[in-house]
Image 1 (cartoon, helix red, strand yellow):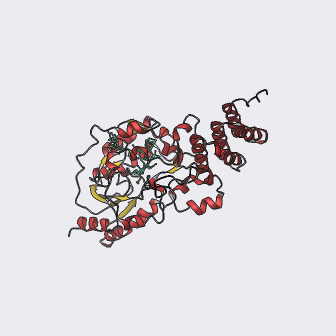
Image 2: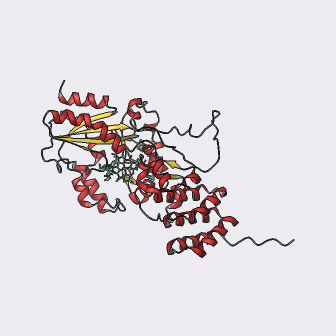
Image 3: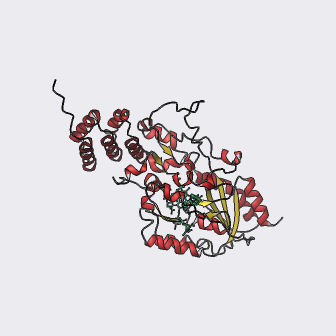
Length: 390
Ligand code: B12
Ligand code: SF4
Ligand code: SF4
């Protein structure tokens, strides 16, 4: 068996659902796409992104001048069964308390760790034979999707995700850049054809052209990557998402009937967190309970203040007045970011109790931005109802 075939067989045995090889020469088309989008401001907001990174990420030899091949790998991640979540045997929801949504890729243990672990035996195979080899997973300077597409793993969909035949887009990507000269694969001759379902379903219009995403409109960016205040005009568009967004993948016909992922591959993610958690309960998390619940998952990235900011927005969008007491308690949270977004949510809910909580907060609030949010929310609530004459 050739080294290429042995590596592919081992990758499959390790749980990767697709594996392919491409040469280590620069990803020329992707470099141009990334540079153009960066120049057009479509990646604005990502503090760690830069024009230099866009160029460097298209060159596998940047960090390994003797690189000859890139092994592209796709790994399935756990998926919540949306129809079964929190349902009784009859299929009815067990409760009507407001719940948020977490993107399915984040439901298990942090995927960076899982994929890094699973690539170790492949690295060992290469290094034992005297080759250099380095793994990239997401935050390395390499365009994961472009490498995967050139290695024939799948095609780039209009939602920008890599679509793997048989597995869909619910996969996570990694690469091994190596000095070994492996047998390359060819890109697939597949495309989305006439379908544009993802572009139509996106609530924020983030997919500005087929395969082109405006980061500043994507719910995934605002709820995961963005630190700080979420602009008021974006908040209503976020719906009940509290970490990431899967709408442009849920609608995708390629994801409709994927092959069941290998159980052993999924077991590497450990137990899943609740995909549709109770929003009011999340508002009660302190630093310690937040850590205990999310330290192992990708949700940890937002820290408590970012997640509870998102929870406030989701409660404002779900707009169930029974949440007023929980949101009013959040007005005395230690984090201004949480207080300010809770105030916005109370303004959306309205009613006498919300108004009372906001009026109290305006009087005691020391942070100018939070006070402004409280005042705007009070205006949104409208004037107090005048008791009718008897
Ligand atoms: C920055 C980033 C984000 C940003 C910006 C995303 C973006 N589309 O650029 C934000 C925070 C919004 C984001 C969101 C998500 N991300 Co992200 N993200 C990244 C990261 C770190 C870099 C992506 C990047 O380089 N963007 C720059 C642009 C220029 O590159 P690109 O989007 O890949 O663009 C290519 C195609 O669009 C194509 N193209 C160009 N023109 C055209 C024209 C047509 C017609 C077509 C079809 C294609 C096409 O060429 C481009 C270059 O290769 C990668 C990891 C990595 N190191 O690559 C993960 C990554 C792309 N993200 C991933 C995931 C899982 C997500 C989310 C699904 C998470 C979630 N559920 O919330 C969402 C999906 C949102 C979406 N529709 O893209 C996975 C994707 C897996 C897959 N199957 O594709 C990656 C690969 C991480 C990983 N290692 O697994 N992400
Ligand atoms: S992840 Fe959500 S907001 Fe972002 S492009 Fe897809 S549907 Fe739009
Ligand atoms: S929804 Fe349609 S257009 Fe969008 S990625 Fe899937 S197949 Fe392509």
